[in-house]
Length: 135
Image: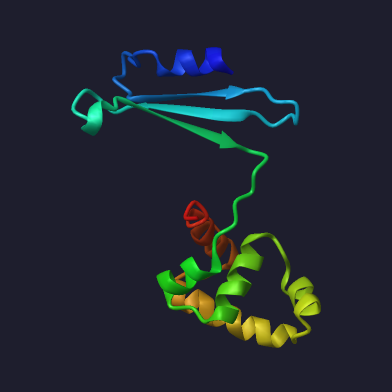
């Protein structure tokens, strides 16, 4: 992996003038480690000229319910439901685990969709997962 990092952090240039590139480094799990390098240029603050981001495709970061509450003015129950939906759980599974009616969850989901200005669960999941990077 060190060789891949060295290669990616070497001066980045292409005929198209792109300022980033990436590589996929094989791992024992079968899913690659994705490495993205950005050339920040010489005008970057503090003398930092490059940024390297490592993306482990085996990790599945989850959004924090509190972040969702603050970002979209969700209730605690709505935020918790949004996190569980984003993690791939069905309403039936959540209802069973939480001992609540599916109808109650559907009503909460409808409220969540309205507050987040989304129209489908898939759209909600995509939106919520963009916030998973916030610790």
